[in-house]
Image 1: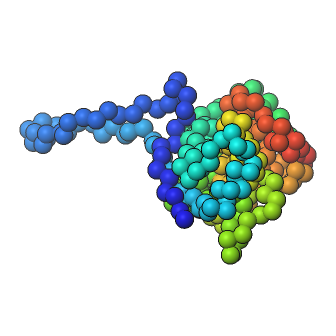
Image 2 (image 1 turned 180 degrees about the horizontal axis):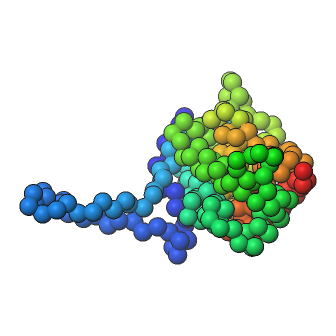
Image 3 (image 1 turned 90 degrees about the vertical axis):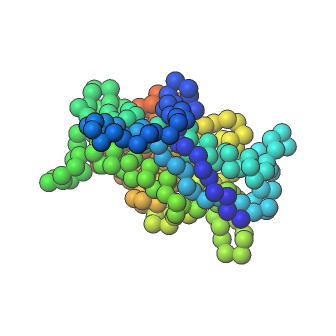
Length: 259
């Protein structure tokens, strides 16, 4: 069963939410004697087009994770995944928000310090001699690519466990999120649903970012991967720039060595 998600990816904080254009009456035909009005681009609004696969067995598995105090239905699952798209993930990848904007403009000392705290290197460093893009440009580009990937209509999200042939799921699915390079399938694990049960929106948004980076760029889950290959360091950098608390599961695994 697939559930189509139709939601605007916007922060839930009313102070950060983009204004929604109110309904207006039809525009009358233009007067040919008057010059045309200037073209004004509307605010960029991305539609969540991911499709969610969730069987009865998967719903049962989610219920066992979150406990009896939370009702789990198809609708609740859809809303939880929608919220993961809409809350922290857009801020991590939006061109007007600090994780990207501060790398694509003149970099301040604070930006460089937070980048180095995550990746172990300055954003002004180059990955190799003769490289055309420095580390900061590479990270900004990858955040942009992850955004485009996770708002693609080709993404399929398994609500619990990797969708193995025959309808089986991972046992145990003791991870936050699982996906593979160039495979537009995403599996949410037990840690994602524990984060949902405790209201940990930061971890849920981080899971969506991780999925996009792995699918598009093959970034590694391995803790001691090189700085730009460690998926958790992208999350740590973005959360530092947004001044969100760093979840322990992210901080534990962002241990990239300076190379």
